[in-house]
Length: 171
Image (tube, rainbow, N blue to C red; front, side):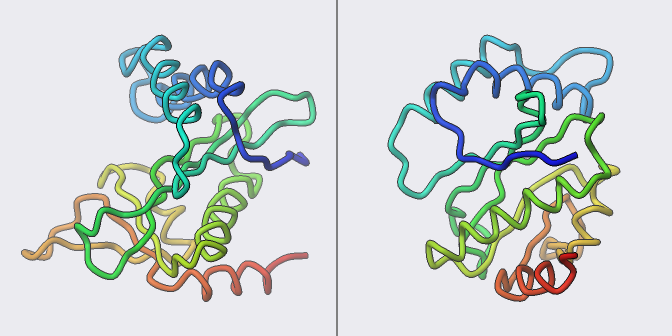
């Protein structure tokens, strides 16, 4: 499936909100629950309508024009030393997973950070999520607490190495 990667804008907020609700439920709450469409619409309208020079949201459009995945990046607040960027959100509809699109989103976020002089990134997820293997396959390292516990944080300390690895693997 050849999807188009693009920057999302405030006009994409309704489609992004609907996708976020659907993918969140697929991932975290398959029997309902999670934030409402109205809440996600307000959040994405606010975020995409504001001028955040350091924040960005990338989307993947399927050939039929549907938004099927997205990733958001922002500066890391410094709570974990050594990481300057944060892969704040990454979601793909289940129907398009395992086609290289998640990897494409991670790479696009990494490249965007590098263009902005941000050399590293991390993400915070669920320590028990089945998606953790995906991050590890992409070379992310587990971020452990001071007591050595894993709470779902992953980091890429060198985005240049990550993007070089992807370029070598490209067909």
